[in-house]
Length: 128
Image 1 (tube, rainbow, N blue to C red):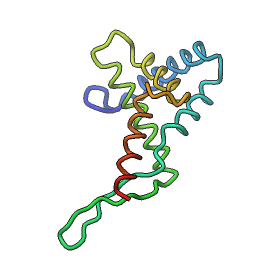
Image 2 (cartoon, rainbow, N blue to C red; image 1 turned 90 degrees about the vertical axis):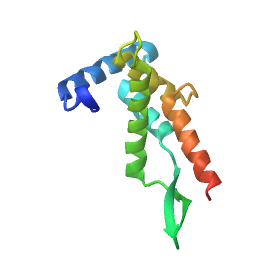
Image 3 (tube, rainbow, N blue to C red; image 1 turned 30 degrees about the vertical axis):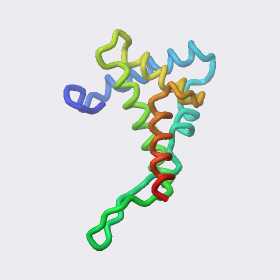
Image 4 (tube, rainbow, N blue to C red; image 1 turned 120 degrees about the horizontal axis):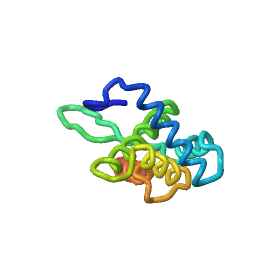
């Protein structure tokens, strides 16, 4: 866990993941690990843009994303979406994480991670 009061609480993070996986299994009747893998595959951006500075002019250039960064970025987007959904809400973080994983695995546009991925790729396409 990260951010403020949740810094360094590994046991809490593991508990949240366990509850989320149980919820995913109950809702989909599939292996939750496979659902997570599908969510990571669907939520990982293929193209991104980076800043290139030359002669005092800074412009953005579209670049391909390395496989490791794709995995890290998609996990980050999924957790960010779950955290945003659970903030000031009745639903627990585990329920929100389960919803985010299921939506991302389906490729649904309700998923925060899928929306962000599409936005990143759209910006990169404009900067080609």
